[in-house]
Amino acid sequence: MLRLTVMMVAALGCAAVLTGCGSPQAAPAPVAHPSVLAAPTRIPGGKVGAAIRAGKRLFADTALGNGTLSCNSCHADYGTKAKKLSTGATAPSLIGAAATFPKVSVRSGQVVTLEEHIQSCIQNPLGGRHLAANDPKLVDLTAYVTWLSSGKPVSPGK
Image (cartoon, rainbow, N blue to C red; front, side, top):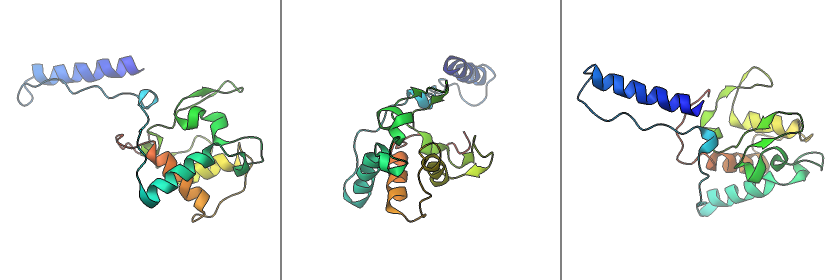
């Protein structure tokens, strides 16, 4: 799919040059698929950085659910790598994921925010309880997952 996308981008860029649309210029740089994007490396300081660090710790905490699973159980290496699940499905890397919200949930078929999607994961498959919108755990997890999209293009609905 990535190869096809890169080929299409290159072809469109060449077509624009060949048809005289604007001044001749190089084709646009191909956009990497979110699954091959690199994770950000620097967590900022201050309160936001503290929330991101707390969210990363919560990501591996089984206490969010029924005590047996954590976010890390499905989204490997703190969400930075895709993982093949025992069901045969693949849980994606979360790098760049926050930049795709709001979007239609595969589970509910409804348009959801990142926070609602995180809540959905906490309740099922983790088996945890619904968190209040201002619960520090939800705020921290959202901060961490959003940080994984640092510098990535925003594409709601993707």
